[in-house]
Length: 355
Ligand code: NAD
Image 1 (cartoon, protein in one colour):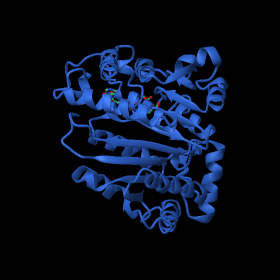
Image 2 (image 1 turned 45 degrees about the vertical axis):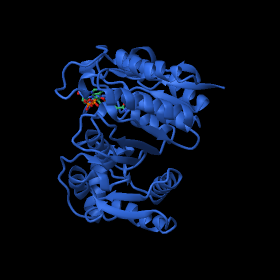
Image 3 (image 1 turned 90 degrees about the vertical axis):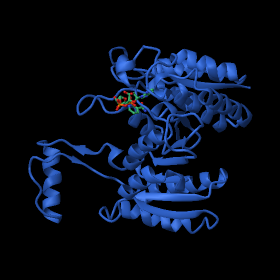
Image 4 (image 1 turned 60 degrees about the horizontal axis):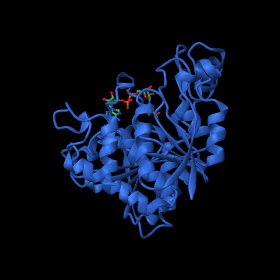
C-alpha cells in the first residue's frame, strides 16, 4: 500500500525538519507518495497569498498531510496560515502528546500528558475589530447600550465558545482517552471569571463526563493548572482545553518533556488530519541544519498511528527513544549545556540507523 500524503515544508526551519522526517518515515518501510504543497510568506509573490487554494485542495484530496511550521507576522500583516488551514479544513482537534523519554534534558521524569486543544474557536476565531474603525465603533455602541461604556480607543477580539464546539472537542478527548486506555480527563478553564464562554465549556464537560464513568474527570482553573504542572505534572493524563489555553499550555508541557524539539502534534477533523510539530519556524535557525527534527519525526509517528500502521509507529518511537537515551547523536537543545550537538540531518540519520 502506498499512502498519498501532502507535504508542506513551511518556512524558517520547516524545510530542514520536514526533509529529515520524510527520510525517516521512508526508512520505516512504509511507502509514501509525497505531494509537495508550498505555503507561507515565501510564496506570497508567486500566488498572492501565503495559503494558496492548491494547498487546501491537496489536503482534501490526500486526506493526510505532514506540515512544517509557517511564520506569522506579529501584530500586522497577513493572518496566520496555520489558523486559516485549521479553520478551512475544520481540523477541530489538536492533539499534542508530551512524554518524557529517558535521556531528555528535563528535571521531570515519567510525564505522559496528552494536550487536546480546541482548534477553531475562542480568541482564535479571528473575529477582531481594529481600534478606530467604523465596525469597532458599532461594537462599542452595542456594548454601551447593553453593558456600559468602554473607552473609544479600544481594539476588540471576541472570545467565541459554542456548545457545539465544546461538545465535539470534549467528546473527542473522552473517546481518545477510552481508545488509548487512559485513566483521567481534566477540563481546563477560567469559568470563575468568564462565565458565559468558559462556563459553557465547563458545563458541557461535566455533562459529557457522566457518560464515561470509567474515566476519572476533574476540572481545573488554568492559572492553578500552570502551578500544578510545574510542581507535579505526573498527576495529569489527558487535558482538554479551549484554543488559547491549549496553545499556551502545549508549550508549557513541551518544556516539561525536554523542550519544543521533542513536542509533536496532530490537527484532526472529520476524515482529515495534518501532522506538525508544536514549535514554530524559529527564523533565526532557518537553513542552518541545526535544530531538532525529533518533534517533526514524532509527528510522523502520530501520522503512522493515524494511518493504522501501529507496528511501524512503535518501531519509529522506539528508534527515537533509543537515540535520545544514548544522547550522542542529538541536536544542541538536547545537550545538558545547550551547546554542541549534531546537525538536523545527522540526528535523523541516527534514528534511521536505529530503525
Ligand atoms: P518557535 O517555536 O519558532 O521558536 C522558539 C524557540 O524555540 C526557538 O528560538 C528555539 O530556541 C526553540 N525551538 C523551536 N523549535 C525548535 C527545534 N525544532 N529544535 C530546537 N529548538 C527549537 O516560536 P516563536 O519564535 O514564537 O515563533 C516563530 C514563528 O513561528 C512565528 O512567526 C510564529 O507565528 C510561528 N509559529 C508557527 C507555528 C506553526 O506553524 N504551527 C507554531 C508556532 C509558531
